[in-house]
Amino acid sequence: MEYGQFCPVAKAMELLGERWTLLILRELHMGATRFTEMQRGLCLISPTILTKRLNDLVNAELVIRKRIAGQRGHEYFLTEAGKATLPLIVATGEWGMRYARGDLRETDMDVELLMLYLQRSVKPEKLPGEQSVIRFHFTDLKKLNEWWLIVNNDNVDICLEDPGKDVDVYFTTDLPTMISCWMGDLSYRAAIASKRLVLVGQSALTRNIQTWLPDSMFAGIRPANEI
Image 1 (cartoon, rainbow, N blue to C red):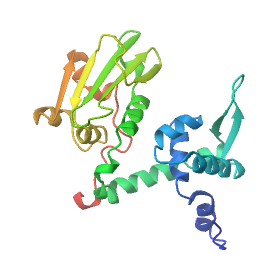
Image 2 (cartoon, one colour; image 1 turned 90 degrees about the horizontal axis):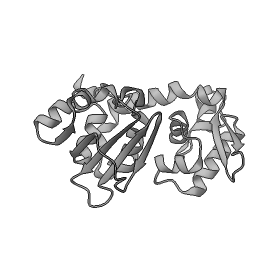
Image 3 (cartoon, helix red, strand yellow; image 1 turned 45 degrees about the vertical axis):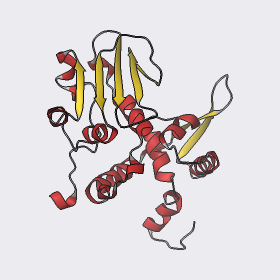
Image 4 (cartoon, helix red, strand yellow; image 1 turned 180 degrees about the vertical axis):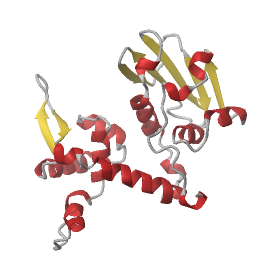
């Protein structure tokens, strides 16, 4: 879309204002490099739109596309211009925390996005030993209600089927509660006290979850009407 204006805001919006573009940049900033990884973080985007937006970002030189060595397909990486969009993504998220999250609907409660974020948030170096297993059971979901995060050294994988390994920490809760805890709207202590969350595991791991599973980078930003 062209706005026909010399204003830098208008010129920036010609590159960034299309639907999904900022969210694709969000995924790239969070470490996604492959098409399928971006689809996981953007579950409602069609392959056609994702392809077009990525092509637009490549043409605008915000993203570079590289063929995967020895495989079919490509990986996508931010250029210097692309990396420079991070403050814009952060500012948009902070604004959203203050002014837009009051409009959260049930359809916004995306368990796949939450688990992707939790996978990305785990700090393996803060967990003892070479392997740790964290199990999540969501009591309010009929589908996708069982998840496992398997931490092997620096690698964190997601499983939807029981991997048959000893579990170090069990989370039993409902999806809105887990989202609220990770977003910093609700403390783990308060969730446990209200029986919205049952946490089982050795106290060295459960006493301070944020040590190895940090909250969202936007946690602690309160809605404007609470300030």
